[in-house]
Image 1 (cartoon, rainbow, N blue to C red):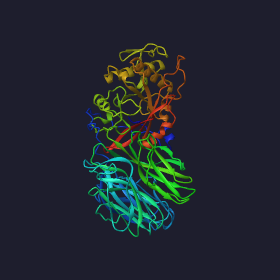
Image 2: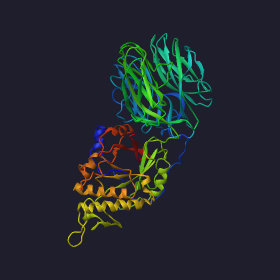
Image 3: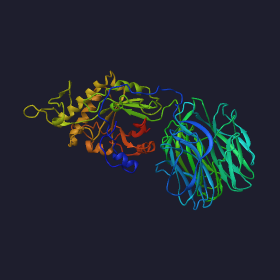
Image 4: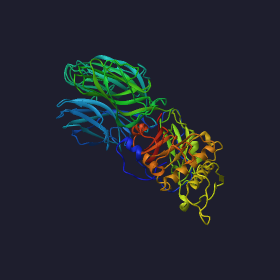
Length: 636
């Protein structure tokens, strides 16, 4: 559904909960079966990884203003790619700061790597693309930035899925300028048909300043895996394609002790996981010590609860002594540190962290204390649990392609107005029945429209307690009576009967013999007909609630924004007109947010509910198939 009035966007999650409104749907209705992909337990083709030959995609002077870089359409990366894996190298920066690589047009500023004035640094990241483009900038000063690409994510039937692994050492040797071949496929849990691997690598005690290059075996491309200074240990995470099951490592000058753990692999297997780019967001800022601190990522920071791994940029700063940082999936250990730092230095690294232990990662330092920052840029899902979010559809989606990855589905009973049925209800109900499940929400839910046009505007309005073939008994507002001359009149008694009759009709629209098997939501919007007298609207809503309960529907809730609900219903009293407890106030909330991110939808769960019941779901609008679709987050 979509709320239909437009108000100014509000700047914080809680303000959005109070009142952001979405754009209205089109008015043309065409009954048709929705187009969906056949649900499957195999990983979808969307979000698969395709490695490319290491290549320099960009090199140029960059300052504090974003520089847009077209990455799609070159170096084996299609213009339709949704994300790329790249290493950013900064040379000769004029001031201390950090390098940012983000989707083109994004306001996010995720730090890929920090540097001091004049220092050359490298950092690897996965960045989402907007129209095949990313943007790069420095936090201060200017410098030369090079971007080396290693592969891309997107829709590809021949792309590879990802499988995280416990860190296992595959290379521990002194490496010089002659390439050292490192066989990986068939060892350390990596299958023989793996196409690429993710390596967490450090260089310790290098004899001279230089760069480490890890490339497919036999490929001596001049790309950078990490940059180091003589005598200083530094780490980085890299994704590299396999050639004949192997990679090679070499340094640009001198020698260095290289330690490399494999932490995951890509392969053609359909049982692996696919990548979902996310708007970069800071997930946590935590004090770190030699005792591991667990940080929950799933269910927050834009990561759904069914994610199997998270792509994060971990940064350490303010260390009291020189030490090493380790950020891993909770319960795991790695021989290779996430990063090595000097006292007071700020430096980071990217990693793909498995989330198999309660959706958590752990952070610790080897000595002293420090502050650790965890930024999320994406996550991986397998093919059996859906997107981890719900989708709601109704008449505007008739004949249109709708997602098939819903973990739960919500279907509108009504057409554009409350006195019309949804012409696609049956097919959309079947679509919802294919939901993957796995959340706290019922797999299938329904919603109906609230409206109260009043006697003057209504196409039909009660003049007694019998309306639309239904007789109301026990109304807290007494008997609905006509005005002089027999015309209908807008009274609370008649509004109650109107709501009761409309709800009973909605049950009929559904055609369900047991409507109580589903949760039903009542959609309250300022764009639907309502009275300026909020007591009339509350009476109509109470009538709807009574009718649904009469039909055996006990699981009811309210959909709206805080602002719209207040405008339509006002402050709901704790008792009804007959002195009994209000039937509205206990109901749970489903909060509409408008076009925003999953991270914002998750944060809105801690906002203010519409009435006394808890916030069970939040709704946000995201792009899908060249249009928009409503996604829903379960707050528990």
